[in-house]
Length: 340
Figure 1 (cartoon, one colour):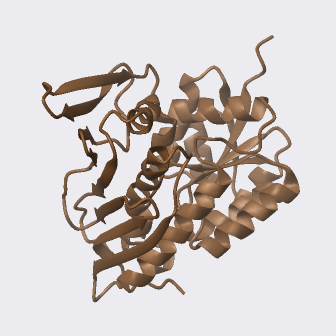
Figure 2: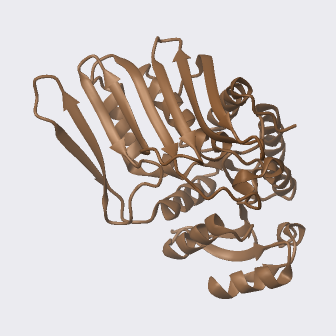
């Protein structure tokens, strides 16, 4: 028998919340039960746009809604841990936007609360749910390009330097490393792990630099180099102030793999293309197509895990999240960023 749809409540009504709400309406595994905002008017306007779900004028009121089974948290970064903990204590399952917290220590507190409450929790790296990533990892793991030596990944864009935006607010966790640098960290750790036959690997050394805004005290452009125990190096780039090419490349002893714009997958029905270049062979491509949007796939992954009685998902396990946050701590420290 088909399980009933998972009933979602949204904490936050920003751009990402809107994308997730629209995606929930695509799925058969989920439905939008309620939305919470800091004002009743904002919540009511959002609810009218997305199917007239219940509207709550506070996050606490949403967590008190008995019809909400799981919450999606898309507040500014410093509020992620606070509301993930509150949701767990309210007995709600949690999908929380990245980064889960502002530090590894704070993330550890969130995971402890989820474990104590017996609820599902996942950090919302939506690209981890798209099927192209499993294929990319399998190409690395099965030795298609030989022994992996270097992973390059970048997520960067040039935004308008707006002191009123949360992206450029130190108090709201602004800066490129936490906003988009967490993606290259996560894919590098995953692929270094795949090369070693593991779910992920942790770097033994992290070197980082950043160009900081003198006025706003956030990182605008940043780079890092990770070294793994296997000898694999990973070079990472991110930023809010430079329109670099967003990509991942993996170089091995027999060739390379290359994916452009991996972070948002592709529109439903369109392929993500993995470019395979091997010595003495013609370059070829592997195309992976999904028939739902990437946020709808993510909602399905969470709903199916919860209905299966799981507390975490192998797409982004608790140990993986904690390792990612601790690597980000090291990059931020090396780059001179301190949010305290």
